[in-house]
Length: 283
Image (cartoon, rainbow, N blue to C red; front, side, top):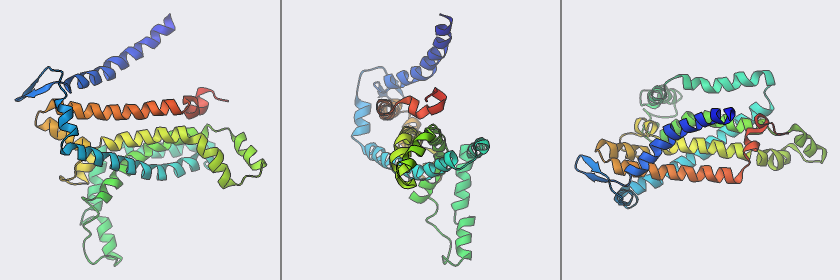
């Protein structure tokens, strides 16, 4: 009974502090806007305004940007995590992983503004390209473009993805590698047939982390994409600015549902013990 009571406390805290606000948000999404306020209702007008207007185009663009940015982040994070799990000495692994967390010691907004200075017309990248003779003048496409948005998303969320992939790869039993080699498979086939399939739970978890962050992004799209660059997070902020709380709640609720489907898919497809590996005591 004591153990159950101790377990119940954090579960109640999660229900109150996380599920409670989500329930309030879903409820407000069914209300209707009335002047500068809103009134309780059971209406789907906010969802109709979201799915039937220009905001749906913003949603689809956000979906594409988040998915493509996640693919780019995986292309960088997986090799890095693989090298840490298989090539770095055990006594240095914690130090290397700590280095990936160092950027998070700096405020996220400050890091994004730093990229704006670096990529600007008078920034060091543009000056370096001119000094090398690769351009005849200041470079305009580095900032306020798709390139700068993708660069900001990758550098902001890619370090998050290294940790679950490393955890999944490091949890793979080394005897499976050795068995593959003894059966005549080379390093490439061993990776494709043993390591990659067994690391997919970590890859999918990393993809969720990266996709969720990129899908709801506001700062990167505003600072690096410019005022005309709209993603779903910017649309939600715009709805809040005009005090259209039901519309903002509807867009947020729809986004949470999409993320919930991804989480459900992960739990249905993968064994959690495969992702947590040795921490769960898997042999």
